Length: 183
Image (cartoon, rainbow, N blue to C red; front, side):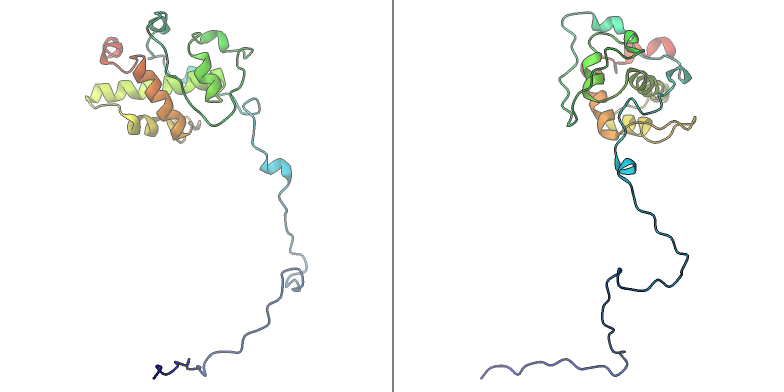
């Protein structure tokens, strides 16, 4: 014999349901209520040329010398990034970069001034960690470069920071010997 069917008990306290009305058909409660629609311009992502350049002169230059990249044995690792690389060779601050740094800046879709700003911010925090005797791992680098700094300038994505940390570690820039003269 099959089990008896369960039935729902109806509650007397529930109000009868109203018929649903689409937002277009519903009357406006307030006559002067205004709605804003998003335009395509607001949704469009800004290109690096539209961004405000970060002033890299704010931070002192604690970066390792770029002459350490002159050797043929020292190369930045190949960085994979989902965006299309941009050409930065005609940027006004490109002359401040080493030739081996240009592909990284291009692949991470940064302007040279943004890269120099982030690099200086990165190594300023690297020096602070060295003075405390702490290791400067990927998490510390991400904390150093994300969000706004004390000057109100925003940092970069934590994924870009981790790629830069790996690249700087590969070429030996995170070694303690580069921080010794500032300690």
